[in-house]
Image 1 (cartoon, rainbow, N blue to C red):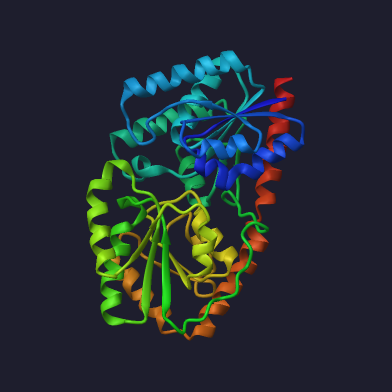
Image 2: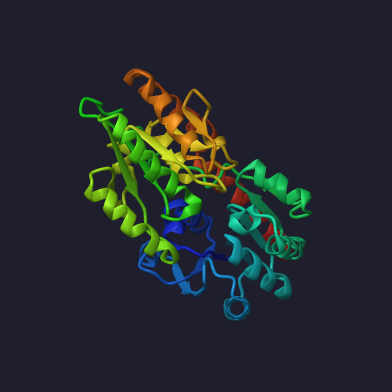
Length: 370
């Protein structure tokens, strides 16, 4: 069987789905990956997989560019003749799924999150929902990563009768090992790992760092992540200024985020919306308490009050109060929260469960094709 995987991001594919690719190969499936070219493609190639460049605008909505993407997928399917196609993220789901439907290829869609357009009601959201209805109608399976997204889409007539809920992308518990909670003798370190853009809560995080540092001298705020190109001109000068003042420590892009997590005490994830947060799963696997937005895709990763605390999304005051709450705990309390977080992801979010679900649905789709 020949499987073609469509995505919009090589780094995410490598970090969160390489085990899926390796499982396909172990089953004897020829596995190809089609996504935009960047430096992270080399990591996938190094695993022994063929990477096919398919350029796209990840965040744009230019109809001419999107139509060209659809034509690229049509040509790709004609050239490669896959038996089953697996798609991730909005544009591969929609344009890849439509091309599969027209080519009568079995395809499985993974809705990794609703995205800004669907989170905000309007004409664009209505158009996207209609598009999803058309594409999902012929999908062999529609995977969801949290029950909130799943219910929203099912209520919109998307994926009904052929949906499956996954525990996100899961977490590799061997790669992300439990790390002993570090001493707080030199201060409490908060860490945010995110794409630097408004919807990931960067403004709330920076405001929290400013306010908390004034009141609690024993705190430190770390930041890891790349800038989104369309907002880099806004946030880069701001972050540079805060770094120069010693309010935050900005690491930029980090290949081994686990090392920075292990050196930190508390992980903050202020995202406005998620499919299911890999950052929070990895933080819990590491044994760190988490503070996260009370939104679908974040709240599922923790046990409120036991392994983490929730705060209102898009609300810096709520985040600041929550930071003060956890600072009121003892060092031992915070360490115990991390231990409970590790136990929780071991029980619920082992990536092997995700791999098993994909293999089951791939087999079903392949038999139907045969």
